Length: 92
Image 1 (cartoon, one colour):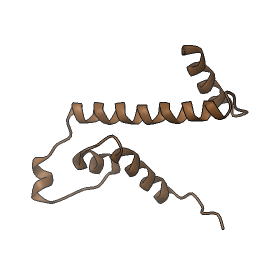
Image 2 (cartoon, rainbow, N blue to C red):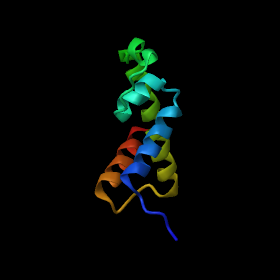
Image 3 (cartoon, rainbow, N blue to C red):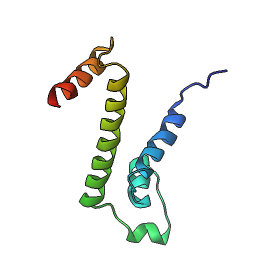
């Protein structure tokens, strides 16, 4: 039986993808909308550098996924994916 994709399942995927580039717990909590009333949370704040590293890490994962997809087939019947695959192909 195939598992169904749920919004909660997407949250798990999002959290996992944020862990991969070494995102701080403070930034992950902020991105996930978690409110933490602990003393530790009062002293930790999200910085521009944290956000930049997260964006860079997620961009690297995205580009790797596009490259892996391009190796399977450089085109797609899905217009937006086809455009992304061909844009990257032209940039190489």
